[in-house]
Length: 175
Length: 175
Image (cartoon, rainbow over the protein chains, first blue to last red):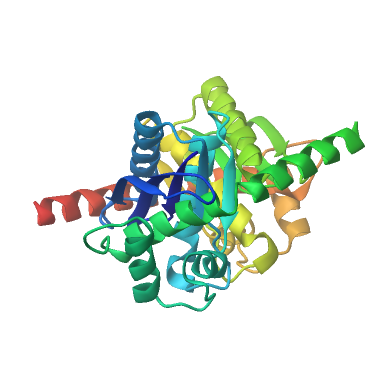
């Protein structure tokens, strides 16, 4: 399967595409950081993000999109923009019927490093090793996006299937 | 001018359209509350919101969209969904080149009632009086959306013009 991992943010949005399956070597397809200028108004920045995510989905045609789950308790100064950027990414995927999964930072850290409290450098080092890269992807947003894609593949897309099943069951229940 | 006011939310999204100008009587054009079911996954809910906002913009062709500014310090359980819904509304407008303005809840309360700490009932009563309606718009999300549109008209779209001027100046400065 091919997964687009997204580390959402208004200023820097990490996007990483990984091919692979559980128990087989993974392959880096592409990685990028989408930037928007803080001199622009937020609506314009979100439109830039929308266009960037749309272009990547069209180019790479992922089977799933894995986005970092943002918590309201994160850094207050950036959390609203991050939530908005993640919402745009969700819509870009869902509009095309591509399954969207959310993974928390500690799930991602645990999946790639075995330690839910790993720091950025450890996550970056493990992403480099797992994808057999010559150098650590930079900035950290790029490595985090790849870590999200890896996490999603290793979890076998299980969470997305569980969510879909629960949503379907709930819909049946309310008919 | 015609303004679409939006009180963003994942479960209930208030949308109110008001025609008018500073110093002249205002007129209610349309008001609605867009609802999405909590049994759906967030990406699907956001796509429903996108379609609903797009349809309203197409139907009513507002000159500006006024959205309630969401704060990270609001109720933690709903703030992320509210931020995402507001981001979708911003993109729907900005994509079409329609100016977007944000007004805080206290700015709206102060504009319609003269009291930045007015409660929901006071805001609803003032919206009813200002638009010369027979009954208070319900639920509160509908009245709040209309209050946002009224606020924007009464502020003469000044904030949007200031924001645009600052953004243009900043762009010139970084060239």
